[in-house]
Image 1 (cartoon, rainbow, N blue to C red):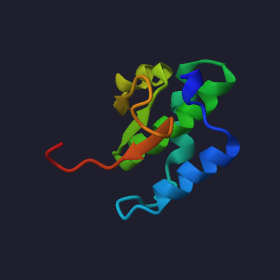
Image 2 (image 1 turned 30 degrees about the vertical axis):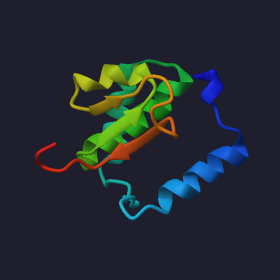
Image 3 (image 1 turned 120 degrees about the vertical axis):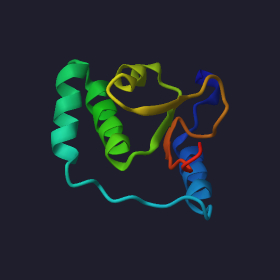
Image 4 (image 1 turned 135 degrees about the vertical axis):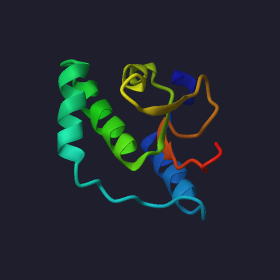
Length: 105
């Protein structure tokens, strides 16, 4: 993935392109986020990145949306109910995001 890493300027450009799409929306932070985040954080380990991984997994799980990522570390949350779509290579322009699924997806 190193060849696909964006600069800060490139990351902001990709972000602006993504949020300009009509099918992208902001979701509020769920009310139960702290409890779910703590629950997932306590079982996922002590690494600094696990703290943010647990938050993103909790956010996705509470909104019942799919987390899209290149990061295989999120696999540990699948058994706990996280809907996950993991990409390999440069399949998407951003490393992490969320998808709201249609009922028949």
